[in-house]
Image (cartoon, rainbow, N blue to C red; front, side):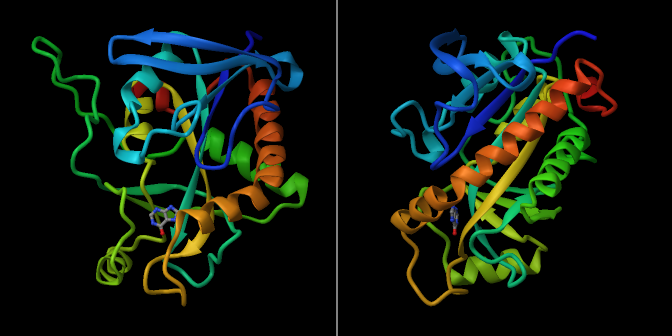
Amino acid sequence: MTETRVAIIGGTGVYEPAFSSEPRREKVITPYGDTVVWAGRGPGKIPVFFLPRHGPEHRLPPHRINYRANIWALKWLQVKRVIATGAVGSLQPHLPPGSFVVVDQFIDFTRNRPSTFYDRPGDPVVHTDFTEPYCPDIRKALLRAAADRGVAAHDGATYLCTEGPRYETPAEIRIFQGWGADLVGMTGIPEVVLAREAGICFGLVAVVTNFAAGLGCEPLSHAEVSALMAEKTPALRELILLAVSYLGEMGERRSCRCQAAG
Ligand code: HPA
């Protein structure tokens, strides 16, 4: 069995070290710009990469993240599977702040982000399948890890991605509820789309940090989001590490169709 290469894309509050032993900081130069990853060995000694989505010092707001450079770098590093984290607002009473959610659908409400690798003159016209938007193998690994760790994780939710960086209005949230969205965030798209184009399996574990605008009593703040993430990160890290070890056991074997799409 060949060993697999897994990456963790850390959102707000989720930073290296501690996803791998002796992580080395590396700059990867891509056709879209540079990006930074930490490379090390994770559970079972498999190669594990950590990529801080907002940059090493959390300087990049959601609409300025270089999603193409990030995914291109992981492809170049021969990463086959990605577990991403994301702080989200909840649109549903049964998903209160503190919940972990293994997302299974998305709605793309971004408007101004390059969201494909196929946009240069001469590139083929490519329409990627998103019937199953998130990798079922990674979803299974995350849910199994949560069960084994005794951490409650909801199986399935629809994530709606806004352009940000502002939070939503209550009127927008009511519309999104009508569309069937359960969670709202600013960074899940186009990451998942580019990963699929690159043939990389991708799973998203969302952490609910607040009820969405108009559903809670308080105005929204980044401080509130960061505080909740700080509280939840130790359990999230454990869950992810166990999921990585399950993915490591699977090796290169993939029963999903993510690869074929890329
Ligand atoms: N809206 C958008 N993004 C978010 C939220 C929210 O309520 N909470 C955390 N990220």
